[in-house]
Length: 311
Ligand code: 3HC
Image (cartoon, rainbow, N blue to C red; front, side):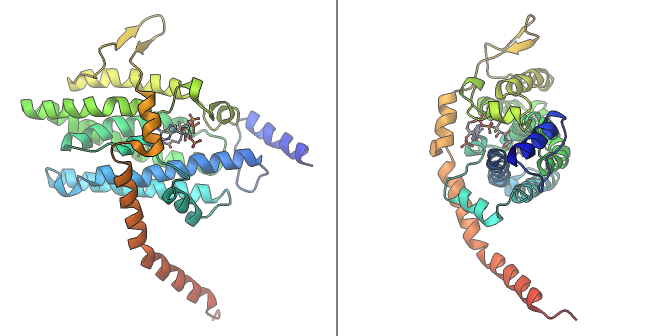
């Protein structure tokens, strides 16, 4: 019965092995993975908007080509993740439907505007940097298809982070107004990037279960701290400031003390009241409508092929 199967499941998790699509798994485990993987996929797709915003205004052909490649990668990340979610027995249509009807969300970070070219650098360095800190542990998550998607995505994310860092480095070495533009972008993206890791552990509804199932390997606050420690050195190489006067090395803890992001703001943004939530969802809905003919054509073609008598 189920308790024998539960025993197998627990033994696989205990042994740090992988659960595969056809293995028995607790319904809670399946639903929790669909929730997280789908929202991860939605984040990748919506994340194309703030970045894509600057493709037509990139300052050089080189920067345009790099940004095009990055936005194209994000679309691919979304598709790998939707494919991983589908292995849990839910269709792409249902997942997209839950994004469009608000039942599922995407990362808070993409509800902030990219106001200047320096924002493309700040998004690469900070947002993709935070994504790497969050995604590297997910390469070891207990669900096979998710872990394998993460391994490939992390390789591409490191290019995203490096190109963003290089944009900021170039600006910081440029004219005073270029350096000021880079500093302004960091000032606006720093705290929303810290909030990306989620609410504090004390307010996290899924962490305990998710960590017991070895989906989440480190807590929200643990990864946030790792991200802060990583960024302090990188900011000093840039010669730019992180907008936190409380930031300082704590020798006892072996980490930097820092000012937490505004978690009420995070909750508001998650609820749909961020600076760009409406715009992001309108854009996504319009893209869905405009793409309907492509989906219909592909389905008609597939049906015709399927109906064709095999030669
Ligand atoms: N934005 C939106 N919702 C968030 C959030 C955020 N930054 N942080 C937490 N939440 C939501 C959770 O989804 C959950 O709500 P739900 O029950 O409706 O799903 C609620 O707040 C409570 O948070 P928990 O900590 O209990 O939730 P989780 O255990 O799921 O932890 C998480 C949140 C760390 C984001 C985890 O879901 C996770 O690791 N997800 C995979 C990574 C991911 O989604 N990254 C998106 C970043 S964008 C990206 O990677 C693209 C790159 O190219 C920049």
